[in-house]
Image (spheres, chains in turn purple, red):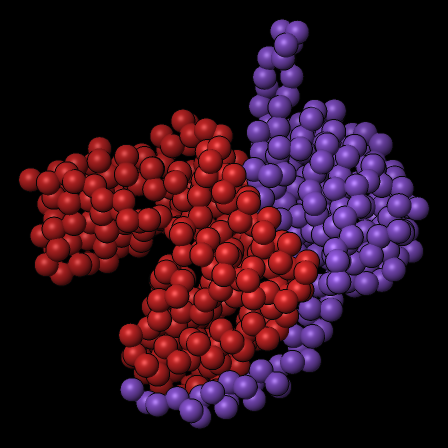
Length: 215
Length: 289
């Protein structure tokens, strides 16, 4: 089997999202929004409940669970500009409870991070036409090289890696389509297979243990 | 001759910085070896990107992972060592200075467990465990910063007179629960016996053993081998998106205890952050990792 690598424009359209299959690789060009904060996600839910306003429009956008460190830098025209010093994924399962609503109500056609999302998100992603992209944990140097510009910062009152950062990237990835818009989840498959193999693994361990000499 | 707080401060800060910007050679060797045997195409691809990421970080002086974790030190002090000042204070000051000077800067990861406020300081930080080295004239320091990614999935359970099968089943269950989440391929440390606190310490120390080094007792070494083979039948693979290579090592440490037997399981993610140095009474410093 050869790996399919797709270079795609973000925010990802529903159409492009539905073209991808679990196991494919994607290289990202365009605009993405990132945050690593649980409080940020809770605040987004407050926005959906009408208790607060979104800092900028997130509908149809891409939301990745990536934390970033930013600092001000003087650009070639002598103006202060925000620069991303590094960026890296965080564990997405931490956001399992809020992601189905965010995916559905904000029509997020691409989400991602590392570690995956549970069945409730898989269902929402199927309905909306959305993919989950797995970023390499411990890939800070590679991920950071693709960042072109900080376009907008939402909720600057929060900790740096909790803020909503709208970024322009070029050649981010390749990242793995780990959940596709057709209900396939590599995480679900891996988990189901591991549980199904538990008896087999124990039989293997029992056999190997019987062969082991006591010191 | 004695070890000065100034030297302890410098060395512990350096160990922390180094641990963030490269991966240990044994972790790199494990990845390179895995590429040769991994049967899943996506997994092999992910392993290659891991190798590239570690190489790029080291070359450019950047962090491998953005989550620098919390500073954790394991220190063994030779009984012949003399100190010319305070040790814990020196390590704390070393970390404070590192926070204000390190490039790129660190994100605030130190979290108050009751209020969830985050910053660069906290009660009990850095986390330091002290032990003794009988007869030695050096201070042996290992730094292994810990973050949520793999730290979250450690677990401990206490059994009454368990047989080996019960212990091994529990280890498999903990690994299966962590599944795709701790940035596999992981190093799994297991601590068996002792007491509640001591089993956890044994497990943590087991994660620090270099990959490929087995326990000195045949019975335990064989247990490590079969657990690794068994766990790599699970299929989580690199970054948990499927593959053969879920763990690069299982290290088991044990201590005698009572009939109640704690079994602790801890994880290191694929970058396996670990650096180590020795400081001698005469001021010599030897960086081992």
